[in-house]
Amino acid sequence: MRSTKKIQRFVVGLLAAVFMAAFAGTEAGAEQMKSGLQEGDYVPAFHVTKAGGAEDDGKPEGWTGCYRCYLGNKPVVMVFARSTDDNLAKLVKEIDDTVAANSDKKMASFVNIIGKDADKAAKSAKEFAKKHDFKNVAICVAKDLPNGPEGFAIAPQADVTVMTYVNGQVKDNKSFGEGKVDGKGIASVVAGTKKILNN
Image 1 (spheres, helix red, strand yellow):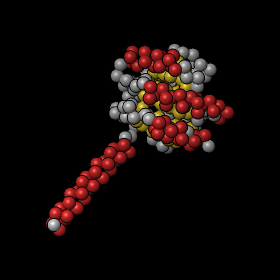
Image 2: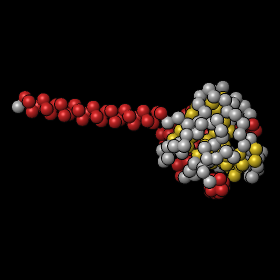
Image 3: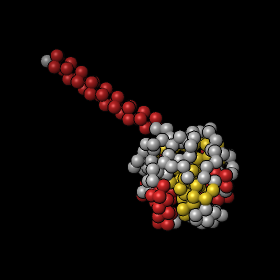
Image 4: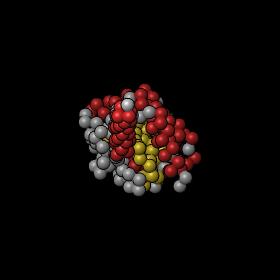
């Protein structure tokens, strides 16, 4: 009888250990996703083509140039995305609202669509901008495809990478795998904007 109980305790303990190891591995995997410029890095110049959005930011649809240069030292939320799905739309909508609420601090934002097919990326960006009519976020296509500008270290497995910066220096970074932009992730991006608004 004692032998049976010992075996049962051993099996339960073993299963618990296996579960905890698997959970820890999942958490570590999430934390290890590293994409884009990290906190403390400076954002270099790069060129994009504006597909739409942010009608009053002084740059017309079709303009090609450096948004990083144009926005200068302003507090900025910069996004690189491969998919223009509903998850991205929800994220950008929250960013749009945050920018509007902080217009007195000259906050700005632009989204850069990237991918292997330049024509497809351009079409997706234009349709995304037109469908959602973002008032304060410019929707662009990065000139350097498929992983964004050289030196930005956008991870191939990252579907969305958000870099929040002010005075040209990154203060917060969030990255998400495909389909991983959820309510919690969006809230974390918005919370990260506090780091650039209190400077």
